[in-house]
Length: 130
Image (cartoon, rainbow, N blue to C red; front, side):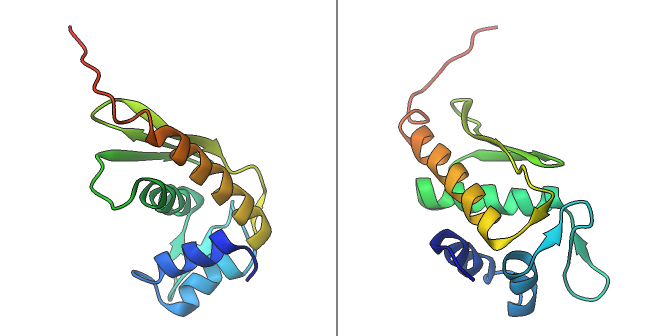
C-alpha cells in the first residue's frame, strides 16, 4: 500500500474489520459498481465505503467522534454535515470507476482537507427562527 492517508485509513478500519477485509477495501482495486467483497458472501457497496471514509476524515480533522456530524452518501457522492450548526464539512464525489490505492489516497486527501477547512466554521452557533 502506498499513500500515508490510505495507511492511516487502513489502521482506522482495523478497529472493525479483519486484515483480509481491510486489504480488500484499500489494498486491492475494486469496481465501484460491484462493491468490495468482505467475508463470505458479504459485499460492501460504494455508499457504505464512502460513509466510512468520510467518518475517518471528520474524526481525523476534528478529533474524536462525538461531534454531531451526519454522514450522507448517495452512490459516489458523500457529504458530512455538522448538525448543530448546519455546517457542511465535506461535499465530494468519488470520480473513478474503481477504488484503487492511489485514487483512494487522492480522495482521502480531498475530504480530509475539506473537513479541516470546515473545522473553523462549525464552532459558530447558528439559530434558525421559524
